[in-house]
Amino acid sequence: MKKALRNNGLSLFFGLIFLLALLGQALTGHALFNEEQVASGLEEISFGQYLVSSNFAVDVSENWQSEYLQFLLYIFATVWLVQKGSPESKELNEPGPESDKDQLVGEYSNAKSPKWARVSGWRRTLYSNSLGLTMGLIFILSWLVQSIAGNSNYNQEQIQNFQQPVSWGEYIASPEFWNRTLQNWQSEFLAVGSMVVLSIYLRQRGSPESKPVGSAHDDTGTTG
Amino acid sequence: MKTPRGDRALRIGLLALFVLSGGALSGCAPEGTAAAEAAEAFHRDVAGSDMTAACSLLQSKTREETARSSDAGTCESQLKKAQFTGPGRLLDTEQFGRNAFVEFENDTVFLAASDAGWKITGAGCTPNGEEAPYTCEVGGK
Image (tube, rainbow over all chains, first blue to last red; front, side):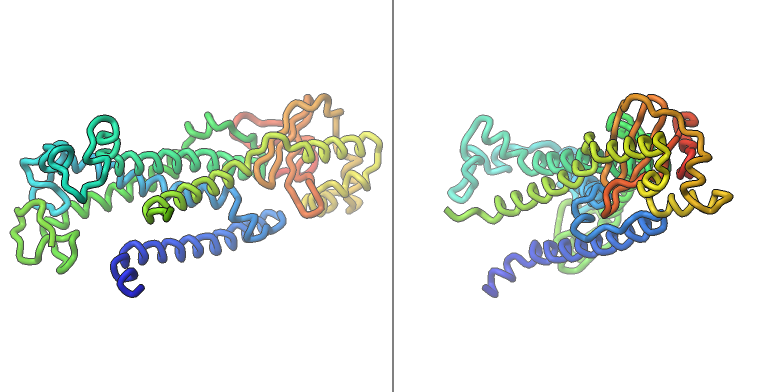
């Protein structure tokens, strides 16, 4: 039990703080929503009603889509693009999907390789891209949820302000949808870009996200 | 067979997205029949000069504001003074969460859900261009 906890510490830690943060978002979101309802002379809603409301759904999904987009782009961009001196980059002479030998697929696989890495054809191709594809699928679904929930939430505000509701098509062309989307994207792109560049010159002893403390600034693709 | 941990995490993630989709979709049921019925009942009461019944269909804040804007200080007297035309045929009802928009041939009614059913926040409303709020005989901005 103790060993299982230690071996999965990273995923358990992030799973736990994710749930705590989501609960905190739900509780504070519910309180804020009801403050606004009272200010507009409308009735308050229960916590359960808030959890299935479009207000909560759009606030959660707009952040999810941008996080998954960030990792999706990072996964694909780091296949082809390199950054001299960054531990986030591959070696400078390795851009691209690399050889079967390097990737341990087909005849170069070993006894412990996943089954779909050992076989050839569509299963190997699919498995070779499964991380990016899954991140991409979650990004698309989250963005779709954001657009639908955002449309509903926007129309509730429109009606409360005695304005005409808009269709989904009008909503995804609206400043509200793109402002919600881009304000999340810009922060994700900044964070990834600064991680790539700062890790060239700065170190975090013991972290695999950093180079070893004594590594040269122009050492690329080494992690400590 | 024991479910691999990765599969379970993926299923939980997809379930979370599904629940969120429910939240997204719950807000846009296009029916809103009950809201349209409340709007029709309001117009029926006004046409039949049953202003007490019509006032009971207004949302409490709207009712108070309507009463305040009347010289006699009552909601009923203000409704009598308001210029309501017959609404005509029901064209469209759109409901998003706890808010609804009911469009008739000659009128638009705005409603909000309450524990006692749909209540009117604006009636006798006419548009003022695409982005601007409607102007309402009762309620509204």
